[in-house]
Length: 153
Length: 158
Image (cartoon, rainbow over all chains, first blue to last red; front, side, top):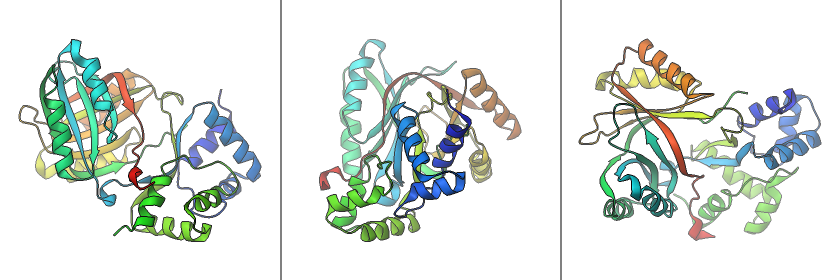
């Protein structure tokens, strides 16, 4: 169970950590505790699996990568092999089987980041040609309105 | 433009930031630069928007947000900005983009919704639809997670 302090700490740590030599000391100051308390508890919470990642999160477009959301219609019996082949690409960060009531046209959805258009086209073509893949559409973003993964505990 | 050292720094920063008093000192050591130089460059990336945030992303299932839905919407072109701004305000919505449509997939606006249950997801989406006068949308609930990781940029530089 998360304590009240854990929740306060996890809420705080999802905001921006200052890019300074001792960032956890700044967090501690804001929470009114010692730096060591923050460090010990964060290590504990990380070991317990509450934290996916700590560090800087980069804007892929600003680093020159191009991204897209891809929807695939895959025959049921081929889903595991197609999903595994998709996962093998390092630019694929999310890959989910999804179900929509009333519209089951596309059952596998993944995101793909590529260093350039040519390599994106190549990856999409090779997935499209896999056995069991009936249709594939690429839905590149036109405008980003929000990217902020934060959960208030 | 990113120089070779920038790419190396960005690649190495994809590792978890150590939870120790001075987390940047060791990383700078591995890169063969001073901690000051590393922090100077990181602050520069932040100012340029290359870094969106420095902090933690939680595992949403472990902290109780066990349901998520990708929601595909049909939004009239001239209302995208307004609806995008509304979606950005919602604490249930983490990602929100306008996107090109597929040939047989006429949805141009996408939101990721996170909640404690599928029911709560549905309520959030229905509320958002009603508040914004939108009635053409699909909720795509995840039935299996095949992959979820953080992107690792410029790994070939290490």
